[in-house]
Length: 257
Ligand SMILES: [Mn+2]
Image (tube, rainbow, N blue to C red; front, side, top):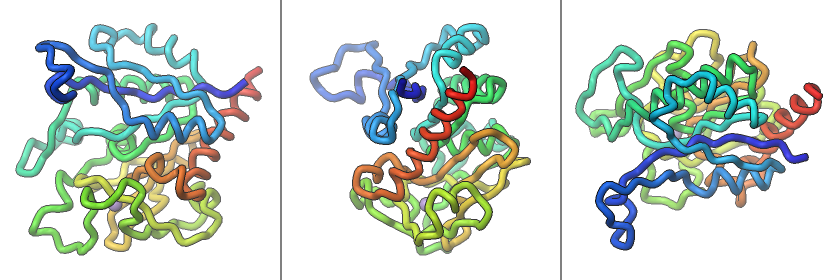
């Protein structure tokens, strides 16, 4: 049996879906296809979870959803509400959805209680850092930023290797990439400021921006600031990241039988 891995999707209004869907008030549950393709390539069944506002405080419901899967991916998306790390809206903050933040934090909290393996990507990585008590810089791409690295490199294809990462020794990430030189795509304008308590930095960009965190005391808690799902079909190293996650999920599932 293939392990089932939940991916949280999010809502967007019909106005963002183009002319043919312009029905006022209509909403869509969306998530980019690459997450599903990468998990499938790595040997898992992706399961998409819509945002259900009416169930946001329904612990029993969320627990049942998570009991039906073997692991969870928290994907990328819009900026995170600065109130969640004791800050304020300020210049260059992008679109936020406090509802989506709360919904996904509920899933993160419940998934941790159930000891489900967790992979956070981009926004999901930032959410993990905040859950552990860390904070974010609202924008690392403004004109007053010293770094030459364009962390929000939307001018290049999704799989483009924008910058190298320095991987810390002794981390899971080091094992995944087997000591190879790794460069990653970069589509984030926010970045980690304070690293959450109990999280280890597993990789950083040459300018010091935190690119990956791990909780060494949790069965599987890995967050990456880049988008491996956009690279996995072209770059075997990035596919290995998904394979490592899926293999762990599969092994843990077998153990529970
Ligand atoms: Mn980056």
